[in-house]
Length: 244
Figure 1 (cartoon, rainbow, N blue to C red):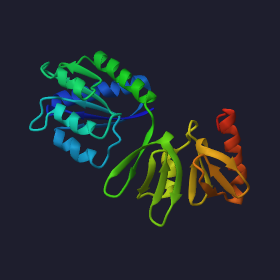
Figure 2 (figure 1 turned 135 degrees about the horizontal axis):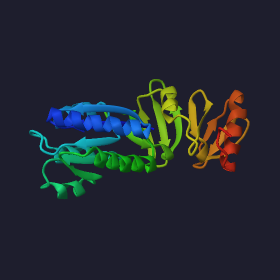
Figure 3 (figure 1 turned 120 degrees about the vertical axis):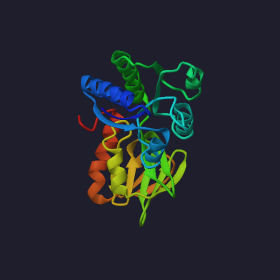
Figure 4 (figure 1 turned 90 degrees about the vertical axis):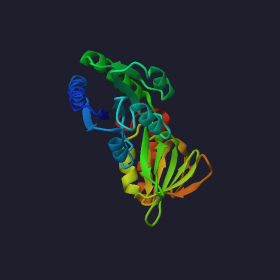
């Protein structure tokens, strides 16, 4: 599994020590690692505005004008799934860790074994967490749980996503969304028409030229795609993997 991890610490020596321990953990866990180190809370927030898909944050607390606790508060306003671990030389802030649902509070100097144990716990939580995709909206990034997506419809320069919770317009092509969704066995997505992508989970019935969804919507089905969509529908409700 791939993990995107950020270390935020204004002491370069500490940051590099932690980075070395993280790389050792990834090697032992056979994990693909994308690791970034930031010297301040501000520098991390600048990157976070463009890339919100971090899995684990390892935050020092005592850092310049924006400390680790305040940084965690800002992240938690829109992101509940990222795993936050505080690494610090002070024990005065432990109560603040509960406020931001921190996974753990490690004291410096950090023992690699202790850090590895915490990273194992973070990885376990992430595997259990509901998978989401991030899509560009109108001046903002929208985080959408895969299980809530019913239908994707292509428009001229955007797509409209129909979810269980409502509809969203996103500035992305249907092909790029299809790639993000990938091969989801639990909520398998099929391209039923050049302009439509649908979750098999929400299909009620299939006819030769159209699909009826659980919400009553009727969408077109290309004749050339009928066989593949129908087979995916049958496999899904028989509980078979698409790779069987």
